[in-house]
Image (tube, rainbow, N blue to C red):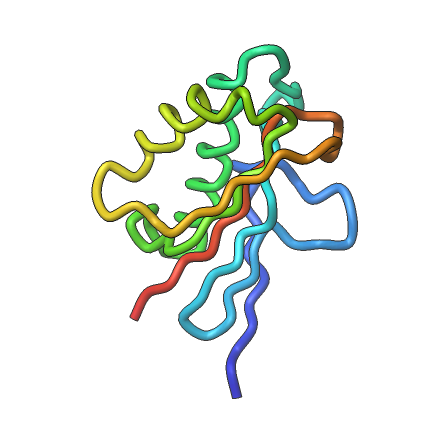
Length: 128
């Protein structure tokens, strides 16, 4: 039977609903969609897709590290953008977190995201 462990860190925004920041199931880590909320100030970053993306990626990195993984262990991401015109600017920041062997990824434009943010990203990590 596969073990299931809930991951929670105060270095990323606390869940605001019935979900976990991440769930480790066997060798996989499933990170819930992260939005650009600073976990210390609770501030939502708006109006600058690059700063917003950086906060999202920092939140993901904090959760991944809390679980004992690294960003190199991330194998899949899903990116949701309020406006696909922001793809290039988001991609510059996103790519800086995966300088080698980037994960598989999909990107969508979504008409409305939680808290009316401009970007949300989820991730799946795996390690032996």
